[in-house]
Length: 453
Image (cartoon, rainbow, N blue to C red):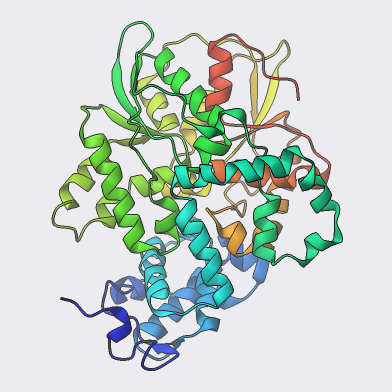
């Protein structure tokens, strides 16, 4: 039996603050050494641009990783805060001329932090709440009734106007502010297990519903299924599917992430599928990393790689296989759109051209590009809860850049980005609607005009 991290020499239990990472997959020194500290990452790092400290940049964090690795720097609250301030947007990976695998380094660091650093009680309670509810749709649905009453009775409006709202801890206040209206379809999934293709069947695909999206943006999943079936796909939606593990994986909850990944693999292993489709970028990035997440698992290493090889973002998939359903204008006049690049799409999955190709196929669409398109919106999973000040500044900047295009509609392919942008639009006096690309394609296929805002 291997020793637990707390019992290892130099652990937080024996010598606080903790010196040196434990021996369970620490950041690879060889990957650390590839960083030549050139500084190219600084301009693209959202946390550095907001905070302005070297230690809150990829280059600075790599220096800290090296210091903790060699027991020169303690894994203290101050050090952990610099790791926590990273959004995990991966913009630095795209930018780095030396090919530093920062994504692998931060992914190895976060489980170390969670195992070996004792957070303050308030943080522990908040993280326990999030990680025991968000990745489990049925548990999350158990909270819907009080939240629905909170919204429908007008308590939400009264609370937000009350000076007492400012007394909430920042993280709880951030959670309250980002709470979207609870839709009628949130209470249960509406899909049968197998949905036939319309016309000739071209493909048989699995579809992952997500956790937050299936509850707070169920219309996106419904539109995605209609677009897939309209383009010759038989869609399989196993009812036993759970969370993809993105939330846990991105926050260093390694054991939980691996357990959720195994469940997802087992759920879809029962079906013979051409592809497994996901319509949220953060989920897609993690699903495609199952091979690395379960690389040390003797029973799941090979199935994880096989599963990951079948995962396709819905935009990636449709752009590759082609649309067969006719498309129609979304309004009488031309329609100007601006597409928002989610970080785990553009940097994690290297998908940026395909969404634009699909949108341009809709008759009458004019696509505009925002400045700083690759800058993170600040959502980053639950980053906007854990680091609300930095997230708010990034959200405001993203909305400003999108609004400057004068587009009539903002298009986003990630649930977290959508909720983040919707939160900060009214603050700047905008009512621009935010839709998923599949919603626009769905309306176009069904010859429906885009809803009036």
